[in-house]
Amino acid sequence: MGRPNVDRRRLLRRRPLDTLGPSQTGGQIGSSYFAYGSAPGRHTITIDFDGHRHQVPVSRHGVWAFIKTSTSPGKPTFPAPTA
Image (tube, rainbow, N blue to C red):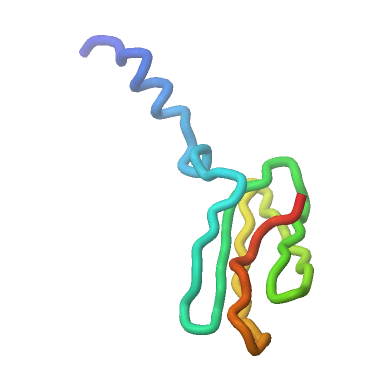
């Protein structure tokens, strides 16, 4: 067998989470809202949702996820990381 080409070796080195952006807003399921994304090098991120700020842990792989049921009478905005 011949040597693998350079593009194949580069593809094999990539990890599945490498393409996950800093914020991927998931959306809404019933009255629950969710978001997920990556924040490499951070221990927590802050999410604004439903008039409150929430501290969300970041995994050792740099990934975070948030899901919460809305308690406000109106329709809340989607959860979003703060700067």
